Length: 465
Ligand SMILES: *[C@@H]1O[C@H](CO)[C@@H](O)[C@H](O)[C@H]1NC(C)=O
Ligand SMILES: *[C@@H]1O[C@H](CO)[C@@H](O)[C@H](O)[C@H]1NC(C)=O
Ligand SMILES: *[C@@H]1O[C@H](CO)[C@@H](O)[C@H](O)[C@H]1NC(C)=O
Ligand SMILES: *[C@@H]1O[C@H](CO)[C@@H](O)[C@H](O)[C@H]1NC(C)=O
Ligand SMILES: *[C@@H]1O[C@H](CO)[C@@H](O)[C@H](O)[C@H]1NC(C)=O
Ligand SMILES: *[C@@H]1O[C@H](CO)[C@@H](O)[C@H](O)[C@H]1NC(C)=O
Ligand SMILES: *[C@@H]1O[C@H](CO)[C@@H](O)[C@H](O)[C@H]1NC(C)=O
Ligand SMILES: *[C@@H]1O[C@H](CO)[C@@H](O)[C@H](O)[C@H]1NC(C)=O
Image (cartoon, rainbow, N blue to C red; front, side):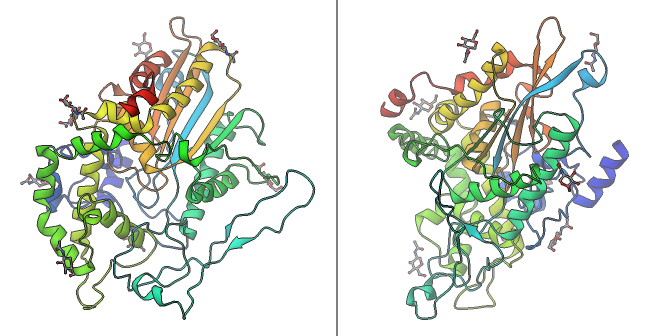
C-alpha cells in the first residue's frame, strides 16, 4: 500500500512529491504567500480533462478539479475498528452530499469569447407531465447560434447554455454512480437494489444539479426503468444554493472581505489581475473583487478540453497556464478564508448553510433515536454548499470544492457497549482531516456536537438582525 502510494505520488507531482491525499491539504494555504509562490504550481491538483469521456486520467484520489474522486471499492478502507474485529457492526445510514459534475462556465468575458463551447452531444431534457394520464413528449433543449442575432458577437457562439453540464460531466456522473453502487450497494448492502422509501434524493432547483442527478442515479440503478422524484424546496426559500434571503449575510460578508488579510491577498495579486484584465477586457469589480469569475472561466475551458482564452484584438496574447495556476491558488485561498480562516466564520456558515446542516442533523438524530425511516440520502448541490459544510466540520485546509466533490457521512451501528453508533465523514473518498482530528471513526454524538453550533436556533432573527 505504501509503495503504491509513493509510486502514485511520483506520477502526480515530481516537484512536490505529494501523495494523492496530500493534494487536498496544502499546509500553507492560510498564508497569502501560497498565492504568489509560483513554484507551488497547482499543489498536485489537476485542472485538465478530455471532453467526451469519463476516463479519469490522473492518479485516483488526487484533487482533480474536473473530476473529483469519490468512494470506490478499489480504494475503500473499512473502518479499522470493524476490520480489526474489535467491534462488529454494519453501515446503517449514508448522507451523501455532492457538487454537480463538470459544466460550461457561468462567467463570459464582457466582450465575448473567441472560442465557442459545443454541447450538441448533451440532450438537456425538461418537460412537465400530469401525474396520470397523458405522457408528454420527452422534449429537450437544443441550443443553437442564429447567424442573424447581433448580440452573439459580444457573447459566445456555440451550442451550450451557460452554465450547463457538458457531456464529460454527464459521463463522469454515471461513473460516479456506478462506483457508489459497487461500494454502498453491492459491497456494503446499504443502497437498495431498486429505489424505495428508504432513500431521499434532494437537489437544488438548478438544472445543473438535476442534470448531474440523472447521470449519477443511472449509474447507481443501471436497470431501473421508472422516473424518480428529486426533492426540492422553492427557489426563493431554498436552504441550499443560497436560496433564502438573509439581509445580515451581506453585511457580514463585507466585514469578512475588508480585513487586512483579505486586502493583502488583493495586493499580492494586483499585477495578475491587471494583466488578465488587459488580455480579456474583464476589469469590472465583479471580476476583480474575488477570483470567482476568472477561476470559473478558466476551469470550465480546461476541464472540457478547450484552451485558455486569448485577447479578442490580439490572438497572440493569451492567458498562460502559469497565470491560470495563480488564479486557482488564489481561488483556493479565498475558499479557505471564507469557510475556515476568518474571525466571523461560525456566524457566516450559520447564515449560509445553517438550516441545511440542520436538515442533515435531523437525519442523524433519527438514526441515533432508532426511528429513522431512511438508509440513504443523496444531496445534489453546489460548491457553495459543500464549502460551508466542510468549514463546519473544521477541515484543516479547504481547497475549492471542485466538480463532483463529495462528502459521505457514514453512520455505523455497532455492538460497542458505550456508543452504539459511530460516524465517519469521507471527503472525496478519504476520511476528512479536521481540527477535531481525522473523522474516521467518532461516536455519532460527537459528529452531531461538531455540527450543532452551526445550526442557529432562529435563522430568521439572525438574518434580520
Ligand atoms: C515556495 O513554495 C516552495 C514549494 O512549496 C517552498 O519550498 C518555498 O519555500 C516557497 N517560497 C516562499 C518564498 O515561500
Ligand atoms: C489528462 O488529460 C489532459 C487532456 O488530454 C492532459 O492535458 C493532461 O496532461 C492529462 N493529465 C494527466 C495527469 O495525465
Ligand atoms: C482495538 O481495541 C484495543 C483495546 O481496546 C485498542 O487498543 C486498539 O486500538 C483497537 N484497535 C482498533 C483498530 O480500533
Ligand atoms: C442489470 O441488468 C443486466 C442485464 O440483465 C445484469 O447483468 C446486471 O446484473 C443488472 N444490474 C443490476 C445492478 O442489477
Ligand atoms: C466579526 O468578528 C469580529 C471579531 O470577533 C467582531 O469584532 C465583529 O463584530 C464581527 N463582525 C460582524 C459584522 O459580526
Ligand atoms: C477597463 O478596460 C477598459 C477598456 O480597456 C478601459 O477603458 C477602462 O479604463 C478599464 N478600467 C479599469 C478600472 O481599469
Ligand atoms: C489556518 O487557520 C485556521 C483558522 O484560523 C486554523 O484553525 C488552522 O489551524 C490554520 N492552519 C494552519 C496550518 O496554520
Ligand atoms: C424518534 O424518537 C425520538 C426520541 O425518542 C422522538 O423524540 C421523536 O419524536 C421520534 N420521531 C418519530 C418520527 O417517531
